[in-house]
Length: 531
Image (cartoon, rainbow, N blue to C red):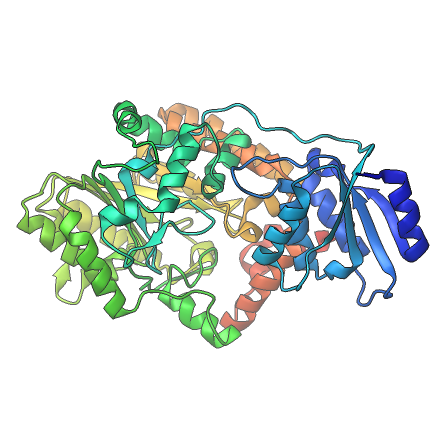
C-alpha cells in the first residue's frame, strides 16, 4: 500500500494539484451540503488538462447491504449533477472497497467511460470517521405478505421502495414473482439484520427520528411476523400467499400535481412529452395492463387488503374489473382503500359508490393539500367545490365508508398545510381523527428539506403552534405526524437543491402560464438563497 505523503508528492510532480482536500467532513452534520458546495465551488467551464482535484478520507460508511458506501455514492451523484469530468478527480482512501464502488456508481449515475481515479494509501489523517452501522432492527413484514405493482408493471416490496424492481408483473406468475432472486435476497438480508438498499426511504426516515411506513406496517401486522419468519425457507423463499396488494396498473389521471411525475399521471406524461420531447417514464400499454390483470386476478382470493392508486383510481377500468371479480367471489369483507383526488365518482357507466355499497370495509383517502389558490397551483385540476360536492355524495350514498383527508407535505404547502388543517377542523369538513398527511421525500428538490434555515425556523414555530392547537382534539396520530415532519425538516440542510427546484418549477410556470410567488408570497425572497 502507498504512503500518503509520497503519493501526494508524485501527483504534484505530474499534475497541477488542487488539494489534497479532506472530504471526511461529509460524515459530519450537514455533510451532504458541505460536499455539494465544495464541488460546486470547484466547478469550471473548462479545466486545464493537467488539473487534478485530489480528495482523501479513510473509510466509507456502508449503511446498506451490498451497496456502495454513502460518501462515494453521494460524491458520484454530485460530480455528475455539477458536471465535472472524472478525468480531473483523484480520490485517496485506505478503504479496500472504494475502487469497486467507484466503478459501480459510475454505471449508476455517469456517462463517463472510466470511473473516478482511486489510489489506496495508509497513514491517512482524515478529520472525521463514518457514523458506522448502527445495530438496529431492519425487519419489515411487507416483503412477506405484500405485492406492489407500479404503473410500468414493475414490482417492488412496497410503494416506497427504491433501487431496481424485484420483477415485472408480466414476468411470470405471482408465485414466481414473490420468490424471485431479488425478493429472496431482501428477505435474507432483513433476517440477517442487514439493511437492503431497496428500503432506504424507511431507514432514512427512522434515521431522522421519524416514524416510517416500515414501523407502521410492522405494528399493524405484528400478529403475522413470527409465523412469517418461521416459515421462511433458507434461501429467503416463501410458500405463504400474498395478503395485501397495492395495485397501480395505470397512470391515467386528470390532474397535474407539481410534486408528481408522468409515472403517476397521464396528464403530466403528455406535458413532459410536449416540454421535453419525451417522458422519462414508460408505463404499461393497454395490452400489457390486460396481461397484468390476468396474472393478478387468479390470486385475489387470498388478498385481504387492496390499496388502489395510480393515476386517479376512479378513472382506471382495471380496478373496476378487480371489484367485479371480488363480487363474483363474494369477498365482500375485503378491505378496500383508495387514494383519490375526488374530482369524479363516475367512470363511463360505472359508479364507484354503487360498488362500495356491496363492500363492508372501504376507506377513501382524499388527496388534497389546500382549498385556495395553492390547491389549484400545486394540484393542477383541483376545483374545491367539486371535491366538497363529491364528498357529500359519498357520505349520503355510502355512510359506512371511512373518509380521510390525506395530504402530502412538501415545499409548496410548507406554510399552507397548517392553515388548511385548521380550516378542515373548524369548519367541521371532517373529524380531526380522519386527517392525515405524509411528508414528501421524492423528488428531493420539492421536499421541505431544501428550504433555507430562515424558513425552517419560521415553519418550526408554526408547527409548534399547530400542535398546541391540536392538543384540544385528541389526535395523537396527527400530532406525532407533525413531530416527525419537524424532525425531518431540520434533519438535513438540502438548500443547495434550490436551484434544481427553480429550474424545474420555472419550466412549469412558463408552460402553464402561472407564477410561483403570486401564489406563495411567503417565498418572494426564496430565490435569493440560491448558492
